[in-house]
Image 1: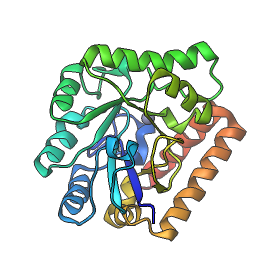
Image 2: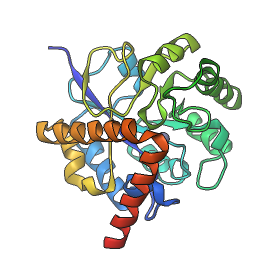
Image 3: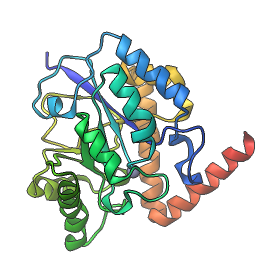
Length: 260
Ligand SMILES: [Zn+2]
């Protein structure tokens, strides 16, 4: 049977979000550490993205990715992963590197020197759906060039900002020389990871340790619930447009914050 793997997405690891819209995608360091220690102690292989690109991994493999280039990549996640010997990829927006709450180029150079992959998350986190061809090219190919120039090493993977852009962005990415394109649709995958936008599970604070285990083990109920939530998000974005959806999400986060 063809082996299956899952890719996890993390964002900021901190006790509180930098901005309200980061919402429940921010994981407390204690929860993140418990998840990583569980992974390091378990029997599942934790593999670098390049193993997925080559289709060289055992069934049940897990890959770790971090979106948005947060400062905690360098100050929290990186040091813990080094101490546990776990590989990971960090996806950054070159136009935002070194701004408040984001890792600097020096920190990214250090992560790269420690063996972590640094990928592109678009130039400045502009959502890619519906962009004019020249702008899509600038976001996808331009960001790759800038990171390569700054770090002096090749960039092989693109994580689609907000999971947007789909097949059109993937084609532009392939022409630009990326080997892997990662999205946000929840799910596991089989075989070689280079032929389609790769699904991933985004870990949120509310998932706790149990949700993390469910993602890693691909428990059917968890997978279905994540896919239903993702479908609702896409439908809301489609109905309300990107700005309207951002307003709705901000209202929901306000309401949740008022409750706690
Ligand atoms: Zn992002």
